[in-house]
Image (cartoon, rainbow, N blue to C red):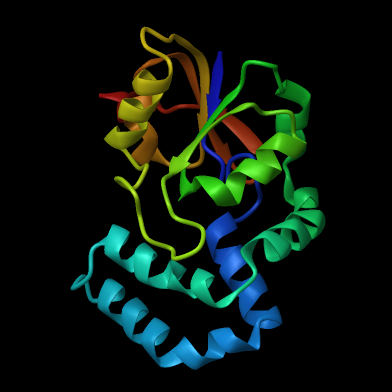
Length: 189
């Protein structure tokens, strides 16, 4: 099986940031929390707030919107951001493992014919995390929980933070824009 990160790998851009911006432009009630969101971002940039706490606070906007409606509209416009290399390499047993909320990327993956989707467990009504952020070593934990004894033929990501998954693959590739490059062997150690 081949395993892929999602944001900036299969999709051009970050799905969570794009969905936030999409909703901000279409859901005026979100603006009521603008000071709180700005403060949250500032605390994260100053390294006072950890990544998962930052993401959970950011995703609290979900309680102010019709999530299903916005997801449907968002992906109707944003599926065109899927990179051509993925459409060429797609296999039935592909797996996506992403730090993005699983509820957010699952509709896009379904449209692409990807059945196996592992993302950060986030409640789509409140934005609360229901488990650890699916990042770094947690991606390996999630992979083995879903596929005990699973073997990765090829792994694709835009970030060396995914080194733990790259180490499991027979072959790993770094996706930079539209280019698919060999994973730097020096970074694998």
